[in-house]
Image (cartoon, rainbow, N blue to C red):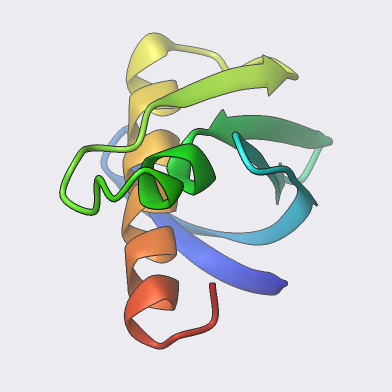
Length: 93
């Protein structure tokens, strides 16, 4: 599944392509592509939804790549969270 997220980093709104690359009953991984490479975030959404925890917050972890700052990592994770919730509402996940 491919899409796009919008992230506010250092006051600028930036658009990044995102793709779900791996899914298991416990975790799923999303690759976010940037100008100089890509990063991979892992979330525990399948585990939470499988156990009936629909309102619990998804835990995002950076498993591949680097970002310049912790605030950038948090901003990308928040945008991924919004993207996943929107896809769930549309029934695509």
